[in-house]
Length: 235
Image (cartoon, rainbow, N blue to C red; front, side):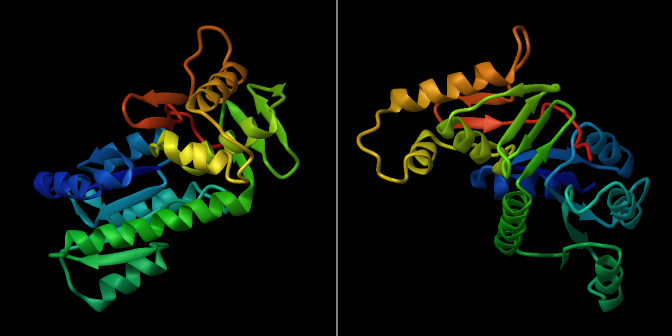
């Protein structure tokens, strides 16, 4: 799961990342509206932590810009940060489509709790939608139809379960232990770690053509990560 942090205070920007890094998120750090728009164009984040007062404009402008480019299937959770503890700022933020709001100074522990809550909303939306569409992939878990660059691919039951786990936790590291527990949670006999490796490798081979980079990355010593690699959503 990917978070975009848009904050021109470099120390606070880094502090936010450090406070959240142990929760398995990946990050894109921006200091201006221009940087934020460029980064969004390279791949929609799942969550945006957005300061209002930025060097080249208002965070409100970026908030509106993001909402104009989204729909119910592609929705980014946005948490607003402001130095002003004013009710009107909160009203404006929420009326423009923000999902949460915090006034500076704030506790990083409280921020972490709120971001984890937003992350849970993202996961629920993916589960509810049963559809994952990017420029490269089209996965419909409701009717069990899977395409890669317009080419239909056929997956085993465990490959389907593994793929769904990956896309539900996009840009988030999943440990081998978690994957094994979720894949074989029905208690179907003894399963060794090699079974997981075989399933991951088979899924990789079906998702990519020769010479292409796989969206399933091995994070050595930690687990696996599904990444968009800059791909955009499609409707």
